[in-house]
Length: 151
Image (tube, rainbow, N blue to C red; front, side):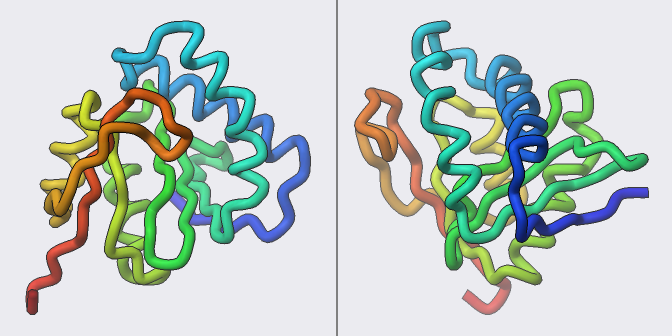
């Protein structure tokens, strides 16, 4: 059974657990990143995890297997342990975000076609593209919006 846990308090233990999931997921899915890119990005992820307004983890058998970060109506991050991918965890997290946190937009790395395909499957469509990520790195982003049934 899976449960969603919202973190109001974020101590070092939680941040470290989420960093492990983040790194595991990024190494499995962000194949366009070089080692030095991952190390550079790793420097600011803990601060983002601390500052993101809404941080929700998916727990399975008491263990965190994935998490997402939300700022207002925007999904800012969603990461799943590599060995847990393909088991519906991302789908459950995203459905929770849409229903409970009113998420209707997100950005995804253009060079991560699996993630883009997942978000399209979940009802998101590309609205625009930017050449760089939010930190000015040369990783193009696709900005997507949720297409509700009534749209």
